Amino acid sequence: MSNEIGPTKAASSSVSAPSEIRAYVLGIFLGICAGFIQARLDFLLLTALFVLFSTMLLGVLYPRKPWRWVFVVGVFVPVVQLLAFVVMKQKPYPTQVYESFLGFLTGFAGAYGGAVIRMAIRELFGK
Image 1 (cartoon, rainbow, N blue to C red):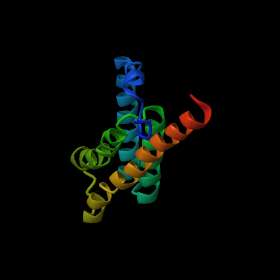
Image 2: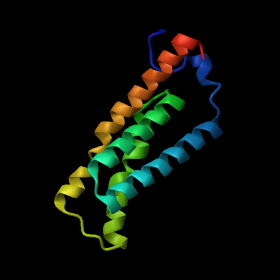
Image 3: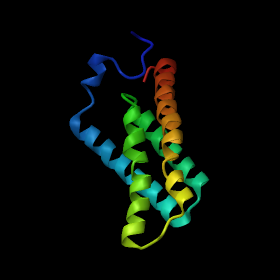
Image 4: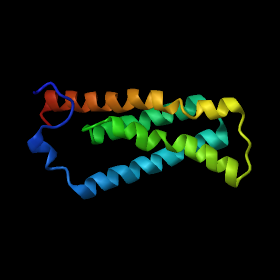
């Protein structure tokens, strides 16, 4: 089917394992940065925009299975919030705990938006 998001089976074999590992490392790094923004600055809008940008970038670079970038980036926001509580004794308010999970919402929009952008570029320019 040509209307699917992501490369065809022949094109997916061109994506090498080291390239995928680099993508996951980049996603983990961006997720830790998003978690740091949430834990230190406690600015939900900035965190949400950073998660949106990060997952969109990963969705454009690696459009196959864009949902995975939501979890790779988004899971680190609550994890870093928890580490800030345990290590730095930074006590979060209950709303901060719930806010840390809102990155998943913008993450889905970014990841699938990035995959659609990649599909549009491929259709328009043949790249």
